[in-house]
Figure 1 (cartoon, rainbow, N blue to C red):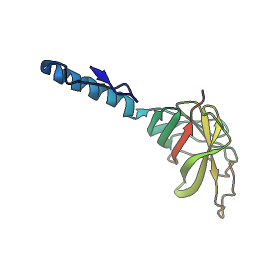
Figure 2: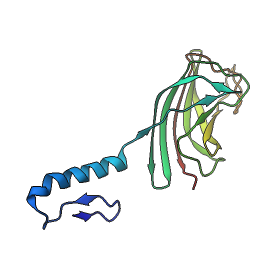
Figure 3: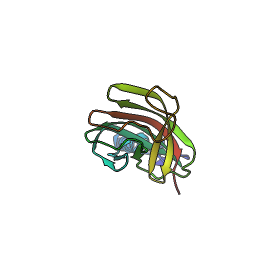
Length: 162
């Protein structure tokens, strides 16, 4: 059995026994599956304290030092307005001062699409409204208080903390 240079995936060589071919292909498939599948994560939300929530989905994948995440979280409890909305991430963030991606907040039927997601700490992100509306100012501490039925979506990528 040989292995690939970049990922170390096993493959059958021309000198391997044909009888072992199925096992060799199965080993290759298992190695690829382990490397490229998305893992799942159950996160937590805070806004002036913990906010009960259900993680509809939170998929993430680490590729070398980079982490890619996509999530949808539905609130079952309430937060406190005028406080930052933060969400935990599965793998630590290297630098917490730069934008990591975009998000969306659904608050009492009003959808806020112009939301940037920033690193808050090594293990969490916060949401910044980037468009002023008649009810919400710019910034990371929105007037709104998360309540049951509200939703948060995010699509982010970041360099992991080492």
